[in-house]
Amino acid sequence: MKRPIYLDYNGTTPHDPEVIAAMRPFLEEEFGNPSSGHLYAVKPRQALNAARRQVAGLLSCAPGEVVFTSGGTEANNWAIIGTAHALRDRGRHLVTSAFEHSAVLNVCAFLEKQGFEVTRLPVGAHGVVAVADVEAALRPDTILVTLMHANNEVGTLQPIAAIAALARARGIRIHTDAAQSAGKIPVEVDALGVDLLSIAGHKLYAPKGVGALYIRKGVTLETFMYGAGQESGRRAGTENILEIVGLGKACEIAARDLEQNRRHMQAMRDRLHAAIAAGVRELRLNGHPDQRLPNTLSIGFRHLQADRILEAVGLEVAASAGAACHAESVEISHVLRAMNVPVEWAKGTLRLTTGRMTTAQEVDRAAQLIVEAVAALGGNGPSS
Image (cartoon, rainbow, N blue to C red; front, side, top):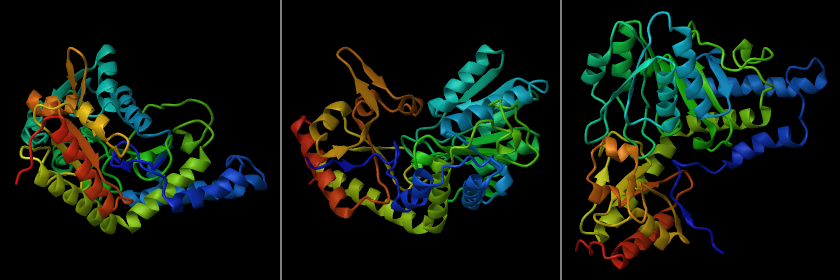
């Protein structure tokens, strides 16, 4: 059976062929432990150092400021919990938003059970946190601001550089979850002004189960994993060389082809949007019309159910819904709720995300199928 057109690149990405090629020797031959003292350790150790340089190259930081993790979730946990515990004598207040990924929101909820206080800032209709709201939320006992660089559902970009300037002027640490933005737009730690930044391999055409945390030189975190002295004593455990090599290569490719890939993803996204808009009378764009990821399209179909649309196209298009509709209720995503998207639009929201491999033919076919499904479900007729 022919595989569906893939439009869920924000969910996960395929492995880049160059990434697979870079990993292959460490799957088939170079199995050594990089901490060993014999010949089998040499190439794994060299590969580990090279991957650290490749990640640092994408983030424009020093290799020693990169620590490998099991993914973006671990990186977020370590950045937030590690800061909270390291700085608890200075204060117990954290600032975040209602818009974050669960790998941040649930970590903050965990810290609240330990006696920390969390301020969750609102976002406007476009999903942007107001810099003035951040400034108003900062207190003498605030120790961390954690805000995502780009939202995973609607793609909205946050004004991280301006917020970081506010925080750091007051001696407050700033962390950003850049899992969605890295590899799609420039993510340079000095330009953003952040102290901590998380990335996830499987959003970058690298494997699942690997990520990295940027830790600015001089920033201290409570140790997250105890054991031996790997990662300069900051994260114990034998390094996952196979996947670290994949992440390093993916970061090298992302840095090398950033502008080319950005233009392609945006062209495919905009082509998809235009084709659907031409066939449906009423369509709502969620998120900021301009300040968003180049590949992300979150659109609502009024008075329809997203899961019904996906069910209708499921054999030919793979995408995500912004709401789950059950027999007696509709569970709208926290992102759409935070933006106060009306329920008649939110329950019919699809997240369509393009990638490097997306073709114009795929986009045109997907748009046709979605328009036909909307019409068959009693949605709006063609705009013409």
